[in-house]
Image (cartoon, rainbow, N blue to C red; front, top):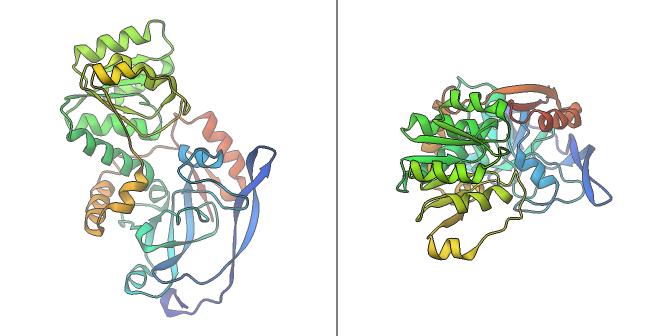
Length: 342
C-alpha cells in the first residue's frame, strides 16, 4: 500500500472517532474505534485535521437526511485533512500528500474521526492560502451558496427572498447575492438579527415572529417583484412564502430548519403558477464533470475570504464533540463550530 513519501503504511490501522449509538428512539454519539483496511481502487486515506458541524449533520443523525443513519456509523459530512495513502489508479496517486477538503462515501464513516477513507471524487485540493479550518467548511456552505445563486441567475428576478438570512449559509447568500447585483429581502427570527443581516447586504429585513408577518412579506415581495425565494426553513415558512410571492415565482428549497411538514394549497400552484423545487448539493457533486467541478471549486475558494467567508464561533477538540454540538445549537446564528483532530 503506497503511503506518503513512498513509505508503506501498515494495515490495518485503527480509526478513532465518534459513532452513532441508539438510545431508545434516537441516536447519540459515543467513542468508537474501528479497524481501517487499505483504500480500494480510486480511493484514498485522509488523515483528518478538522471538521465542521453543519445542520445537515444533525438532520442525518435524527434520520431525516437523504440516506438513513445506522448503529455505529461515524457522522460528519465535511472536513479537511491530508492524503496519506491511496489505492490503485492514477487519480489517487495525484492526491497523495496533498491538503484537501473532503466528504465521505455515501452512507459510510465520515469526518468526525482521526481518519477517513473516501473516493477521489469527494476531494477538493486546498489552495495554499486556505487553512485546514477554512477547508473544513469549504464544501457544504460556500459551494451551496454559489450553486444556489447560479440557479437564481437562470430565473427572471432582480430581487431574492432569503428565508434564513442568518447563520453561515444565510449570510453567504445575502453577501454573495448583493455582490452579484441582486436586491435582497431577508427573513430573521428575532429583532436583534436585523442589523447584522442589513450589514451583510440585505435591503429589507422582516422578522418572522412579528405580528402581520405574512401581510408584510406579501407587500414586500410584490413591491420589489420578487420572483425567487431561497428557502432553508421549510415547514410553516414555506407555506407563508407560497402565499406571499407574485404569480410565476419559484421557491428553491434547500433546507428544513423549520421542520419537514408544511401545509400547501394546490390552488396556489395551479392558479398562481408558483413552482417549488428542491436543491441537494449531493446531486451536483454526483453529476458534474470533473472539469466543471474543478472550475467551480477554484472560483469558490477565491471567494472564501470575501463573500463566501465562514465566521468561526468556536473550535473544539474532537473528544469534546458533544459539547461542540451543544455550543452549535445554542449559537448557530453566530458562526461555525469547528472540530480539530490534533
